[in-house]
Length: 102
Image 1 (cartoon, rainbow, N blue to C red):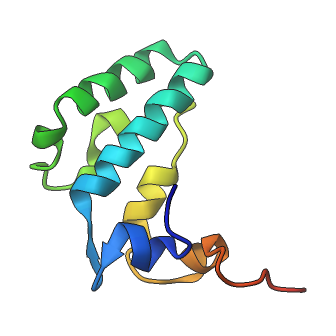
Image 2: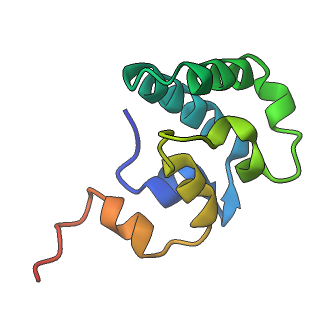
């Protein structure tokens, strides 16, 4: 379950990143993705980051966390951090609006 409008309803509030929930949810999703892809090292890094979630929140730049990087690791969590305004990235994910017709 999640919000229809991910930017306003899930990841950001008043333009500020909801860091704890975004990072926590992202690490959970990435752990499962890494396991499905049989990326053992990435899975171990993500598991360790999840176990130390409070210390992850203290990092100056969360997108630099080594757990979020690595060959084969999806980049969607980094995208959530990079798209810090309600731009086209977020509007294409908003299921409350009908898709655009080209």
